[in-house]
Length: 594
Image 1 (cartoon, helix red, strand yellow):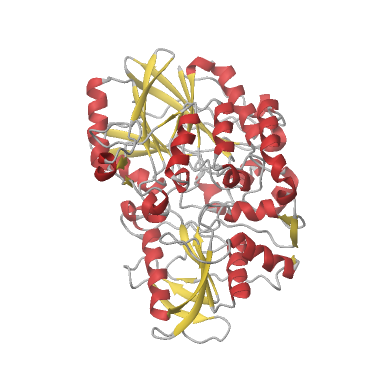
Image 2 (spheres, rainbow, N blue to C red):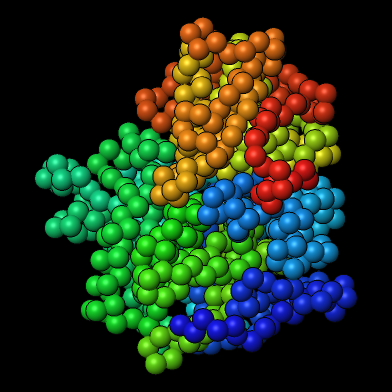
């Protein structure tokens, strides 16, 4: 692939806003045109002879949503100041798009509430279907592939109630070609395999295996000799070119999520196996391009691009990063470009390849925001969504409370939605301390709008939602904080499992992300009394979403709804976000006050 800077195609909002062309870090990148409609905003100048469309981490959000991008996404060591660890104004400066209100709303947390009220919701599968078809039709349907990067079957009340079947049908309506998974594996094994069978797309993974004893007992596998559970790769013929897609599922599924649902399966990064597979594909299949459809997470993908050579593009997901650039990563035999497509149906990657003589000569990359107000709904997808939601309408539309505060989850340490869950656990369970997982899925609510059960379900709808309340000594609480912090800030990306810091209620603490495990967390203090947490003293701790055995309590959505109904209204007087004191982040472009 050519590594020279290609012809710039930065035609964006300059005609309307009088802005100069955006200066992206990589000039293969292009941005969409502007204006007020589908044909103006989403019409891209066709380039090359093969188009790859890529979506990821939609978390079952069939209808348009609000989603606030993080104000804290810290990078350290080799990732300091590099995408995706840049937020707010620094993000807009880095990509040369400061002052562009549409992209400011899409890519950053800047003026989120004002932008949301003015421009409305984003995403929605009926809108996404319209854009996908539009891009296919303009380029040629036979010349286009649609890839889904996983975390698609989970994250809404309807997906939980249908066990992901609503999203399988949505992917079929989209005419998706290839899929991989992560939260897909939080259903039971038979449900997963049934959904894969119902999926028109190929479901791939080179890093998911069936345990040997399970194989001996007749557990199904794609290849019994290797133990591969799914097909590892596929070859797609696109406009005369042979494009190989390799699947990479989330490598830490049975650590981050319950093994008990899928006891016979194992996962891993398997980068050495990936290298062997890429070498074999090159020798035996002789493809024109190799693309890894990954759910590793952005930093892990970048390291994989460094240690595995021969991959042209990694189309990634898991960490929900919307990066408007195909980022080049050097390895010992060339360059691999790493891409990510955000989350919640909010973005669509468009990768146009110019393939000649058995290799990629050049490419153009675009991260398209899905602005719902600019896009008509596809009638077939809309009908499916209405049918899926109709049996649950009374629950989905049930108003629980109101808010004067923007509610969001995404961010390294805490969010207002997470704080509500933590406060609910303390209040309803009568606990001293609460702990809530640092999930990155969950949509936002803007001030002045009612909080519905549908909104709450986007934060809590999962297959292991049970709560607990138990006695725990201070030493264990600190150990939990240290363990999750190491997962987030370990120097080696291969030891990062994605997600954010465990959310806390009832305590404050200080963190130095650059320290080693066991030394990052200090000054843990009970917020109610101002007293230091004592290592040997017992405290009542409430939480939910246990990965090991099932917790005994009610689902967390019941706990949180009880709390919100009693509270009735959220404002700055009754919602105080417990954010830690962070050492060593002055000047870090991964943190802002917006």
